[in-house]
Length: 182
Image 1 (cartoon, rainbow, N blue to C red):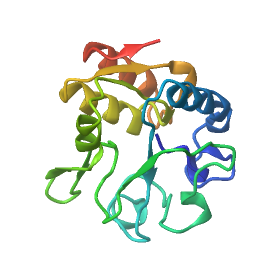
Image 2: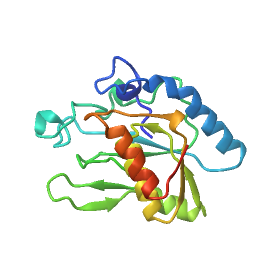
Image 3: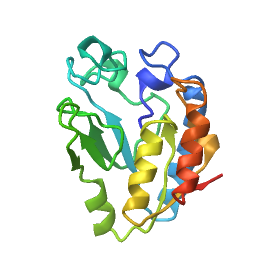
């Protein structure tokens, strides 16, 4: 999930503390999946320059992961060997790799991820990346709603903690939904 320069680099516009520290572990998860013959998918925030998602247009987040910028690129040490699911492309809130939400109406629509996983017969999903209290949480919860077994290795994610305790609340919500957090 979203191992991108704006999140995983200390100079990024929405740096997640310790984000760069998970890259090696994420690569290990990718290598294990590839070795097992499992598909690997990557989510990537890919926002327009103006979106209600950003504080500059009424949202809560500083501008980040603007399409085509260095900040939107994957961390240079991340091994990318699978399909990329872009989120927030049209200005919608793209917290989950499974769905996007119109910031004005709240209407949710699906990305292609759920369809791809179903086509491949995937029943278990390992979710890693940034950030645990937002995109990782939302993707894990959406995966559970689709009936998937979800595994979240905590050492392979970091949390924004926009508000104190956000990380702990996210972990509790995922556990309550049946995500195997370890």
